[in-house]
Length: 177
Image 1 (cartoon, rainbow, N blue to C red):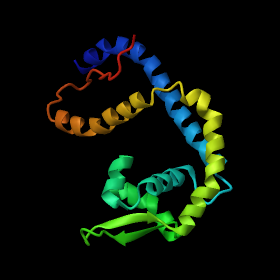
Image 2 (spheres, rainbow, N blue to C red; image 1 turned 90 degrees about the vertical axis):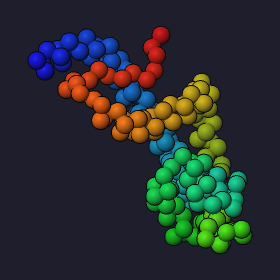
Image 3 (tube, rainbow, N blue to C red; image 1 turned 180 degrees about the vertical axis):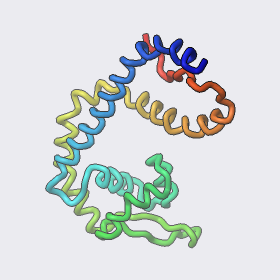
């Protein structure tokens, strides 16, 4: 009985194979995009992720740790792991919050400002290299897709309890025209 249910979904495999390839190449493109920026910053004091975090912090400092996590849409433990090398190298520091001494605010140090300055020109060159492609991307749609995928976990946790089928139909989030 179970094999009959799965056999009836075989046409779905043909329908999603193009989507699977799109996923594969989108994932590879994003990795190549990140690697391009990391390579451009290879001779500086920071990698691309660290540069982006320093740039955000420089723009909005002082920034409470939780607020930075929210702006980067990262969980606090992931942000903490990403900021640890910046703390160790003295590129950022934590200071007491004026209004609430329990909160710590993050600031860019003098060394951190030097690191941002040393990475600015290579980062801008890398951005210019990719600008022709990046301007074609609807970044708001990419951000929306990120939110949908991020939020799927909580949706799936609720939905798992009600799933009965041994071979569920695939859920497609994007409409194919």
